[in-house]
Length: 130
Image 1 (cartoon, rainbow, N blue to C red):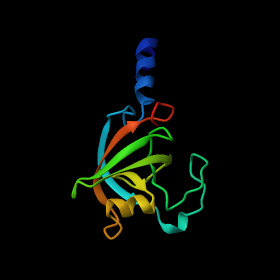
Image 2: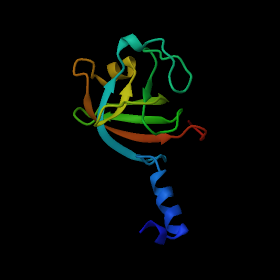
Image 3: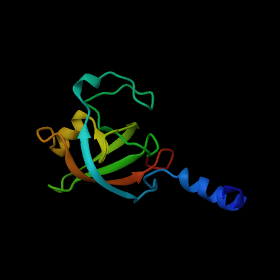
Image 4: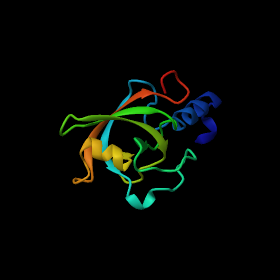
């Protein structure tokens, strides 16, 4: 059966499989659950090579380019913050972003631990304003 697939079709299928799960362009929006890093991770190295600092406005995302800036809006309260993606994660089903402790405090989710959010890409790494 597979020997009948044209090289063009195979190439198209492979290209589709290589796309990230979330479109990475300014204005792209994703919804899901936000959580925040445990304090025990303070001082650990992130995927970007930076040291995680719980007092900085940073976040982890599964597929956005490291260095991207995103606006995270708590859909329950309407409150928004802007963070820079410098790590990978979260790796729990349904969660779309992990926030630093400071970002979680500014968003007002420390007591809840998690919250439904809208994540909007403001700029990608390497772009003007990123």
